[in-house]
Length: 340
Image (cartoon, rainbow, N blue to C red):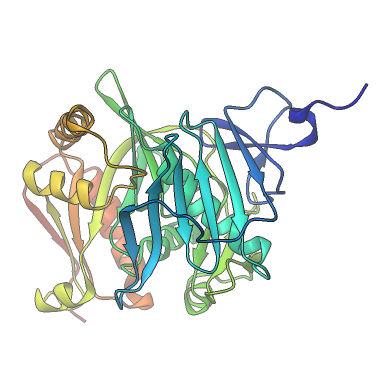
């Protein structure tokens, strides 16, 4: 008797999903053989960029160049096209992702796009919000660092990891609401850092690998010894939105750390700006999303974090953050540290 389709595929766990894949995904934790929630299959023999439907959404680089375009097929599938690299087609029911890559594109690049771009976008739903945020586990719950690319989300998480705090997720954090409680779902045991951050944060040489052909960032693996990974959902304790470096400089805080509680309206706009999203929903979908965000931001979980970007100051930043977690005062602002 021949093997079934599911037995021929690798099986992994990605957050709360069981994923079967024709590609090996060494970054993920293996899962027991069972019927998967999602199937990932690479196709061959297709040219990229042919007969693309009208674009309804676009991701752009800092210089305005299109990084990815989103298209909806007549059958309801979503096609995410990365020019000259690859495209990912999600089925209408969300249970299958097909991959087509350009010639000479490495497995590392495909895995990075799948794990750090496509799957987080696909997991957004009426019951789940996926933020551009990195998170770590503390004894009190999960704390997250959100912000635009380059703000230092992964660097903040890595600094906490170097101090013994387990990683929850890097650059894509799944938040789920149940009975008024917000939980943070772990993703996979790895994060991405620039080489100078690796050298500046760790007093040992953590295991690293390539991320993608177009970046010199390195993927740091949680080895379960000095760098740990949290495997269970945690209550969400805080989300810190990282202020731009120039904005922190303009605050005149020097070597101090400023933590400001965000009012609900501002927190709502930050969550909306930093959420992954696979497609634009109709009026009912938008209403449900806004209602969910309003419930989230009614809780005093969201703060702005100002600090000067300097590896030498990161221990002070971590100390200020940890101190703020046990602060019971509903103050609008906490400033920690003195100029040196």
